[in-house]
Length: 488
Image (cartoon, rainbow, N blue to C red):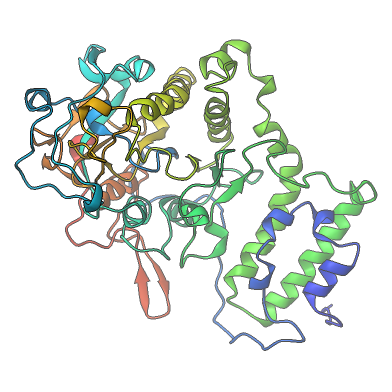
């Protein structure tokens, strides 16, 4: 029987026993204004029927990776001080840099060369050189690929952030995680397929744009999870709406929305909302269990540093990321607050603090995935949107190192990856003698994204979404290529 609307859907949801808390999904309904037309407002134009879902899909090519965990280091970790030792910097330390420098902040610029402030050491059978600030990363050197030739080419945070996550230097586009959901669907119907784990100190630069679906249907956007308990609000329904009562409520609301969808076909936002109701009900049990690390053995919590004040937060999020991937989540982002690696000043004190918080948990994630047999099918990424320059910023000079820092450098920086079919114990690419410009085996942001898609069995040239007159793609650059040297 067709349901007749006697009041607006929004009014019904907000004023009756069918409130959002009653269906345990207010966090999925925050954009209710995106739903279809109400009796009080103008009707949306009728569109042709579309169907979007999160059912698992078979990729067109062989698969190496089934899931991805991205530890995104917003602000730009200094490759000079962490990953890319250069003898010339010690030779020219304190002298003037005579080459071409791409400054971002010219007002505070300097040409005074500053060598790495910490020692480098060799690690693993591969002999990978890493900073003494990263001893735990050194312990997994034989399991990672270190890329020393990343390039985005725009010396500013926003466009470089967009480039690394959406393929272009501008906003309004879908991020990598959303594209993976669009192409592959989800392996779980009890948890969000794409989860963003944020820092308790605050949201990252660009906020929700870091997990945005852009022009893709809303069902493919990332789900923001709170940085502290309760990770998700209102998972418990009201006492009078539990069990069969809740099932009846959800069934009626689903019928109501389905009726509206039939009269307004093609509303992707409403399709996403329909899917969210079922997911919310399933999550009442699954999410609480997935985000609760108290069941983990003590030695695992110690591995991640959950027992230490400095590493507790990041270790907890890394451990949750592993638990999510175990349960079929496709893409997990572990975000830092603000631009916490943006060390224009006080690099001598700030950089060791960041490394001490993150080094042990990040390495533990790789170790734990490996010992559980998950690393081969899980692509782990650690890196930011840029690196730093080889010269001093703030001009105080070398006698006031506690105040100095390094400016942006998007022309040659480093990141590391593990698992998902990537090589092990391998160093890719090279910068010039001052670690400013990538000069050998350069990996542009779009090459990196094309390579990730390839590992998931996807072709960056054919993966697209048609909206209106345009076909949208994650990778649109004609010269983008899969970097096969990175692959094991």
